[in-house]
Image (cartoon, rainbow, N blue to C red):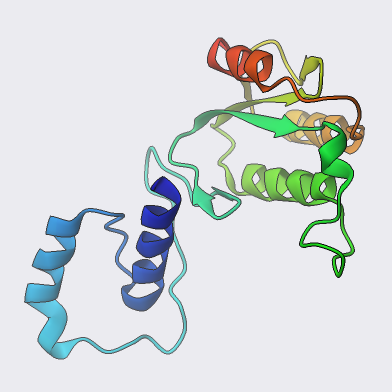
Length: 166
């Protein structure tokens, strides 16, 4: 699955400092050239954004584009406690935190939008918007107003995200 591939790629990056994603042939070639002298780093390396890429992650998954529309569930199920009975934050709080952290790591040139859904959908903007300081603040305000309610209509939310222009 994509999640497993991303987890493996992230682990390999943390062990080697190489960002070869899930390209098995590239890893084989790297190991052939470096395996005999390889040593674990003292601390995990830090990611640096390359042109056309980001260091942003959403729930641990890399955001590999600077044009992204996030889809966020705000149905009643998001009132539940994240991580079960021992948790202290709701799933909604964690989702908003994850989204804010991802957006914070995106460069100013990135263009984003957010579609939230329960039985209805709402968009932060009509189209993708650049991450100016003003838009970053407006997005935080928009996310801060989201509260779990109603039922789940993921179809219309995904359709809105896929039809987002910009």
